[in-house]
Structure formats: structure tokens, C-alpha cells
Image (cartoon, one colour):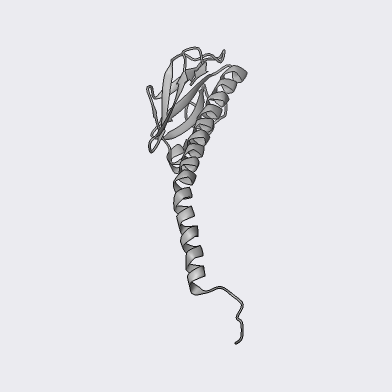
Length: 147
């Protein structure tokens, strides 16, 4: 009798079943990690935009505005320094958090005003949500960011 090298069909099916079960266990954890990562990235994007607004206000002596609405975040400053149409300069271009990270952003006010000293003129709570995850960025009247 000759001896054959290789695996039988039963052995191959067992390996496929074990790999399938392992991936079914790991997939929800992986998806949860991706969702948390997207939430942290969206939070960092909002925080970077707020920092850009404060730096612009303090550096140029103008009023800067952090706009959060319709899942979009952007920064503008008035009065306009660059020649052209309109009354404000766009410092950070509008970025849609929903299309970038799948995160929905809502705000208690439509914009956060930062005066020339870098202090805020109004307080705001920005709520980021992604499925069952939710994160809140609180900006005090003085421009302090709290969790």
C-alpha cells in the first residue's frame, strides 16, 4: 500500500470551522475598537479646530468662531483680512464628521465665540455620538475645555 501525504477533507473542514468560530468571536470586539477609535478621532478634530480658533483670535486680534452644526465643524474669523467677497475669513475649512468618522455632532449653541484675548464669550456642550457610544466636550465661558 502506498502512503499519501496531505490532509483529509475532514481535517480541512475542522480547520475552517475553528477559524470561522474564532472570527465570529473577534469581530464584535474589533468593530467596537474601530468605533471607539472613530469617536476619539472626531473628538481630536473638534479639539484641534477649537485650538485653531483660539490661536487665530489671540494671534490676529480678531473674533474667531468655532461652528458646529449639521455634523460639520469649521472655524471662521471676523473682520476679514484677506481681500475678497464676504465678511469673514475661513480659518479651518468645513469638515463633515459624519462622512469622515461616522460620528454625529450636536451643539447646545450654533457657534462658540472666542474674543481677541483667546477667552470664550459663551459656553457650549458639543455632543458626539456614534451608535451606542457618546462623548461630550464642554467648553466653558472662559474657553476652558472640560470632559
